[in-house]
Length: 194
Image (tube, rainbow, N blue to C red; front, side, top):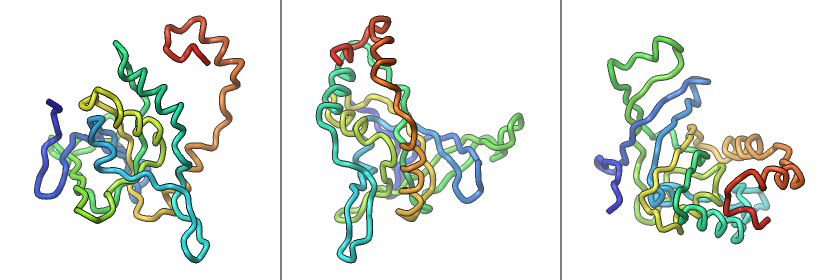
């Protein structure tokens, strides 16, 4: 049976590390089980509203990519270090532990408990996936429902801020296929088929 994080009166409580890069938008690092991700987070698909304004930012799923990840997760020894990046509403609450002081060595991080509101029936989910939608979909389809998954979250109540972060995360030059092909003979991976 999957071990779920404790719930408190309409909220999911998780252990978290809070990192202050800016006071308005702290980062939270925590873990969710594979089956919890899509229970808490929507995938905001790119579309246009009635006025023609752009909403969302995620492209349609790539089924072949998702199935490749599912196969890997269902394999013998999956290691899944890549975090899913989510935007959380300002309604989340963080409670510091151990006196509430920031880490004395760095002055910008502290540990505690993050309370994430649970989605109400018929209402939007509290989180939005900014990066990792293919991984999140694969995790939801895998046999390992309780697989622990790293989550990186930031506070963003507006779609505009989420869109900005989506562009920043995804605006990188992709590794050339030739370079990937160089590594494949050295790697014992189910992705060798190309």
